[in-house]
Image (cartoon, rainbow, N blue to C red; front, side, top):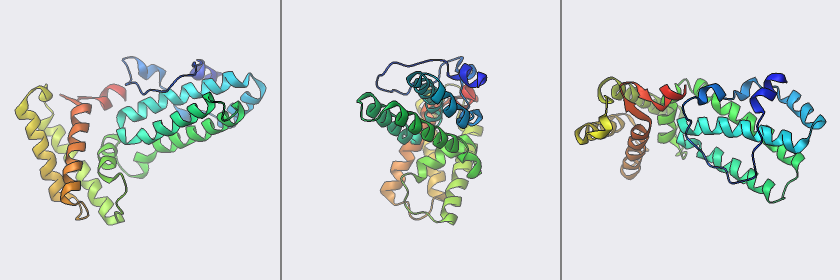
Length: 226
């Protein structure tokens, strides 16, 4: 519990929740929810000032959620759910006991999300591309999902090995080569369920993700926030 207190020892004023990109030095403040004993935390909640303990847990969730969304924008649904929970509490629709219980449930959901790359047999970087290609669900079979995973791996390996050089985002030719590579690999590997319009939409989403996340020469949001 001393470790938990050290991790969570900050309360937050009631305000709208906004995702901020992790800043330099955030690694030292990263909260690993999987290491928190939730039963012990609930006991502490019952013994201590409930409103303060709820705000501490909220802060821990805020930090891990910011980290997860920064790595994979398809996790924005977690942000929306978190914001809705905060809004209900701030509006007085739920009391502090219900708020704390829902925060606990939400924290455990985030813990499962952190482990999903392992269950999908993908790296966090591959998972981000896989999620962009498969969400919302279009009813892919197990075999088709495997196809998409292979495409995500192939694309990432190709881009990292040959395309994402220093300052690639500043050069029009380099950006064009990245987009063409995305289109070629997706066109050659995605299942037939990806219609032409859907295919082009996914190409744009993946390109934007690569542009936002990879800065060249091995520097990326994954390297800087790992």
